Length: 119
Image (tube, rainbow, N blue to C red; front, side, top):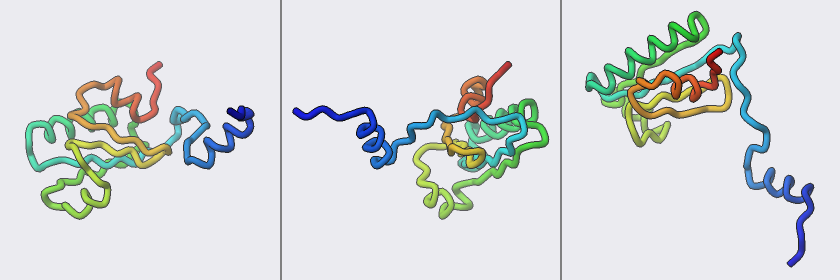
């Protein structure tokens, strides 16, 4: 079997669409664009909204936009984003895009998902 050099492996990885650059932690000046998909006024949706707003106000104050999308009222948007579980938070910016499912009650997981480090 022929061996593949490191350079060829890197080129193959690139061609297959894999990101070989490690994701970066968001800088303190990054503007966050967040979309929270919910299901009406269910208890999980209400908790997700409250928890996420609390986290954003504490860790992202003045540098985020949060759009709350009720899939019952905006089903087409949910289809466009290929939503499969709710509540779902999508971090659009800064890159890379990330998706978090649940009621956002685990602050450390939400912060990690947003690419934020706790100091």
